Length: 298
Image 1 (cartoon, one colour):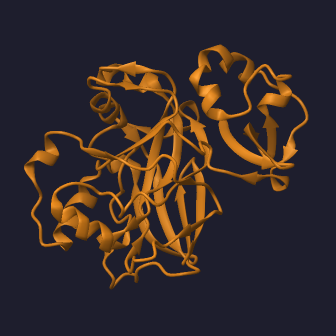
Image 2 (cartoon, rainbow, N blue to C red; image 1 turned 45 degrees about the vertical axis):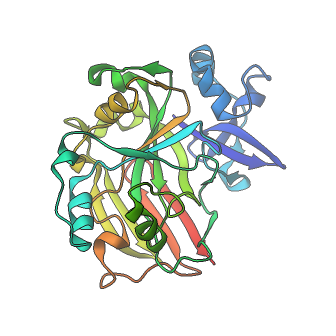
Image 3 (cartoon, helix red, strand yellow; image 1 turned 180 degrees about the vertical axis):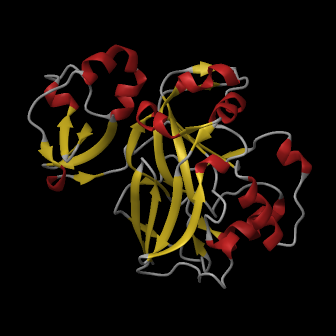
């Protein structure tokens, strides 16, 4: 199943994408199910059977405007879980790999009120000269839980989506010298979309503790980054277990994987590609999850 949020006739609604048809969840349930996806997820056990059985006349996908599937998620935790990215990015800055990275998966909270969706413009911060994209996958929490074990964690995942953790690298580098952050280098935008794919749809790609999903990023039609989700060091189950220690995770919380190896300009170097500029089109593609495209603007 693919959950979407879409704009149609001036209203933003939650829907299901079936082939090239959009099923309006609220309308087809005669108003029994809420019209926004976050409210649906907050009571998903109550609605899931009826959602699975929804039928009726759909709206052509070409007639709607896709939004981020979760325009206002309850929170976003972004991890740092791909070893290749960590090693290479630190090496670019003349830093050795730190042993603590292998001991605990770390994350930061980003701005859950600055989420954009497919085809939206992302604006370069006014004082940024080194704008970057980050190729990531995110899981969406489907039910509340705390102190979740690694063995149980997969049960808390509703599905997956593509994530672009936009980064102002010069702002990030400057502020993180203080030893806290990132803050203004990250909180201006995060892209999610184009939809949330429920985990049963990608089970066919299962590989050990992860999935065999090719991940690519292109700028103006040229592929710059190429990696695979199966190379992740910490599984999403491990990330969820760690994130839930002594706190509660809630439906609609977003857990980001961090950047896949080769998945940003910082890691690749300017010899591979310059920093992003006004008018650049950045498209992320992940097997089974679709394409997430945004245009960079001043």
